[in-house]
Image (tube, rainbow, N blue to C red):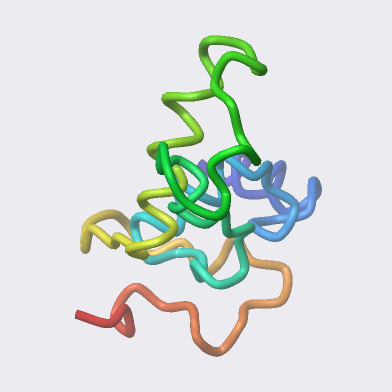
Length: 104
C-alpha cells in the first residue's frame, strides 16, 4: 500500500487524477463537485434552448449514457458517505475536502 501511495503522489496525487477518477472521488466525498466541469441537464431535453446543442447521433454510442449519468450526478452533487479517508493522497489538500465534512 505504501508503494501505491508513493506512486499516486509521484504522479500528481488526487489533483493529477483523470476526470473520470475525480467524478468517482466526488461521489464519495473526496473531491469537490464544484471543481468538476458542469454540463447543464437541459442539454438532454428534447425541447428547449439547448436542444440543438447536443445530438446523441453525433457522438460515439458509448458517450451518451456515460455523459448523461455524469451530468446527472454532477447536477445533483450526489455523495455516498462510504469509503476510506484518502486525504494523504492530496499534494495540496483543499480545506473543504474531508469525508467527515460532506454536506448531508
